[in-house]
Image 1 (cartoon, rainbow, N blue to C red):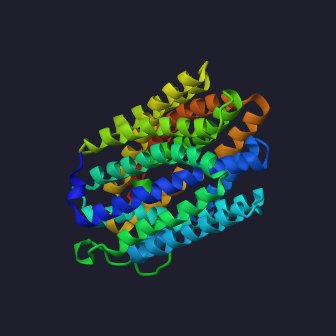
Image 2 (cartoon, helix red, strand yellow):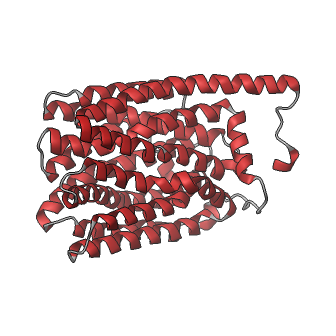
Image 3 (spheres, helix red, strand yellow):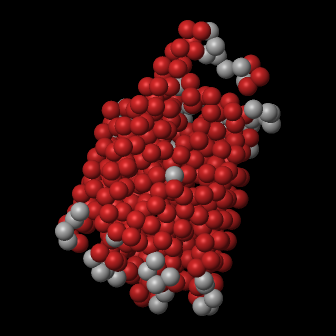
Length: 415
């Protein structure tokens, strides 16, 4: 289960990531709570904030993946982490001094999304350079485990600290300090033990080449399409936990943190189970997505807060099973020289649906209540699974038809 931790560089990567991820989840909890405070409980404003954080991925995500192929990943990650820390510090100072307004949160969310366009595909594709292909699936699952361990600790800690420190401002400042851990881990890595590919030279048609690479391979297309549909409403479900806790069950900030952590406990369990698997499978990918949609519907219909908390555990487990299986499938199937661009496409579909799903669910929450917003997430997730299967079969038939006509090969100019 923990075989990737034998690698010195990966141990540094994970150690720094745990500290930074705890800070990030603390900030996400504080950000949601701050928006609700500044707007007097507006779920629409919460949806807009979520959408703005992921909108840059829609606009620039593919270019971020291309930069991950063109430049050394370690210095690129250092620069991105430093910028994220600076944004957190700025928002923290605005909040502590009493100058924070909702538009400040909107701007910070958009800028964080802009940095993430480069940081996320770079970080995802950097894992294989540390551990190699044999341990890649295990390392991805352990990354998810540490991410969700932070998701357990961070929101609960944030809920306590918001109450103890008298507001959300100190949480942003603590997150800014947490970025020092991941930057230090990157600095201390042994460069001689990294399997760094040759940088991709600048050329025309490289984005098109990445898209063609995905379209040609069903083992890439299936997980990317499924994640595109599921993630659109999975992100909205995470946002809806705050609305359910505050507006349906009348809970305070600390109880909201407990709900987020309960969801993360299930996700952590799913990630640890995934770490034991050697290879991902299509059946596991589809099964995890179906279970997640069903768990969303059930949690939206929960009659009480304890039942809601209980249903968050299988929802978190199913979500992380889907995510880790899709991530491993994509990275193992992608060619090394294409991995940054393929992960750019993966990150685009993984996060790019939020500007559509989050405002829609927020709007439905305003009109019909948070329960129906959560139920909608689950229904659309199940519909998305079916659409992903149908579209993959359509692409396979088109590719086979093109092969028969002798035009399946990519144009030489794109190579």
